[in-house]
Image 1 (spheres, one colour):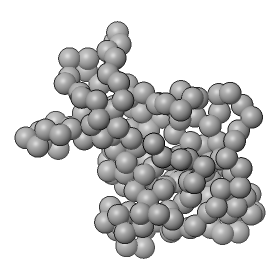
Image 2: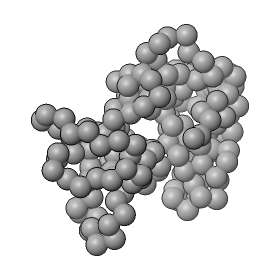
Image 3: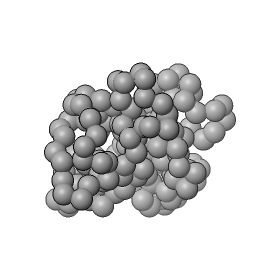
Image 4: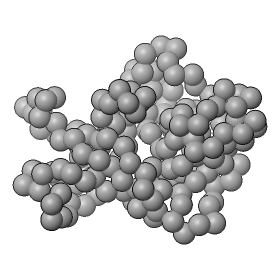
Length: 166
C-alpha cells in the first residue's frame, strides 16, 4: 500500500510518467508535503510547499509518478492544498483496464470514480452485469474536459458490489 504522506507533484517514477505524457507537457514541479493530515473526518487534503510563485495553479493535477492522486484545491504564493481523490465528492472519469486482451478500447469499461472521505473510492455507473475482477487496474479516462492524459493510474479494484441502478 502506498504512503500518501510521501505524495509530491511528480518526484518518483518520472521515467514511467514521461512514457505516458508527451515531453514538455505538463510542467513538472517537485513539491514536498508539509502537512499530511486534515483535521476533518470527511476531507482528504494535503498541504505542499509550492504555490503560485512556483507555477502551481488551482485545479492542476497532482501526481506521484504515473499515479494520479488529486488536484490543487487552493494555491497561494508559497503553499498549496491538494484535494485527494479520496476526498468526499471528488469525481473523475475512470476506465477499468481489464486483463482481457481481446477487449477492444471501444469496449473498455468507463465509469465515474468518486471519493468517500475515508481512504477509499468507488467506481460507479458501470453496468451491473459486467465482469469485473478484483485486482484489475483503474486508470484515468480520455476526457478533454479533465485536462488529464489518459491512463494515469488511479488504483485497483478492491471489491465488487453491485448497486441498484449503477
